[in-house]
Length: 151
Image (tube, rainbow, N blue to C red; front, top):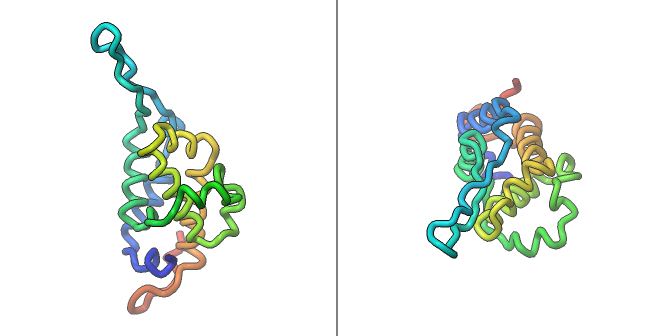
């Protein structure tokens, strides 16, 4: 999995890290929308409203191939990294992808999964682990490639 991540263009990684660096506390607030009565006895199901900044980060993770196909429902049941990413710093970068996948795919089945990742620190742990991998561990990628450029 690390090789597939390393094959992604530098500009896509820089975009992700720029988005992460620009996050504000307001960007991390989740507002629940819907839930109103549309006619007597009929209500819409509430859903979480994530900021544009958070949605852009989620999109960037998907575009970079961080969201992967695997049995995430089983993985999260047995992984010590779930739910808050504690220990992710020293785990293989593939575990950052697995944890990101668990939350992003989980949102399809349980509204508020991304909110949980924001509130428990897992989203930040994922971004930190990816950044460390990119800058310190990433294998050479292409002619003259090497570890990701340092900031």
